[in-house]
Amino acid sequence: MLWAGQPRRGVVFRSSDVFLIPFSLMWGGFAIFWEASVLSQGRTDGREAPLFFSLWGIPFVLMGLYLIFGRFIVDALQRENSYYGVTDRRVMIVTGLFGERPSLDLATLICTITGLARHKVKSLDLRTLTDISMMERADGRGTITFGPQVPYSSFAGTGWPGWNRFASPSFDPIEHVKSVYEQIRGAQRKAS
Image (cartoon, rainbow, N blue to C red; front, top):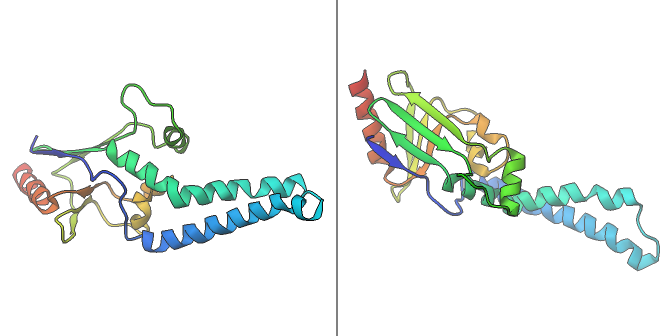
């Protein structure tokens, strides 16, 4: 084992949030306004809204709340339970939310429903990796991506279910990214 680590913990804002935060606030705000208007209609004019209208807004409100808050919680939980490793021959990425006993809370329920709770192991042979790229921030943190950059990959770490399938495997975001990148490249030269 040449290096082992974990991604940064806590809430992480990504470049895609420049678009997603205003969008989520508009979506969630409108959905909450719609649902509140429908539910309060009976109080103002004495006639209650049809049941269909009362139920129609609930999925949109839930999606809005997930976009505003939930995706940050899911992303943080997923990163907290992700582990990275580099050996002299392989790069390994282990993800998944649960150890031996999952806790029973709302975040865990959401992660179970969205499929983020499964343990996944990705092992990449250094000899066959042709494209390894690094993106470093000013504070020394960054991302190492294994494979080609694909369209929409900037949305992969947003916690939205299904977006991870668009991204190449990566160490995201890690401390001292340049040092880890150089270790990987050195191990790759020796493995060839």
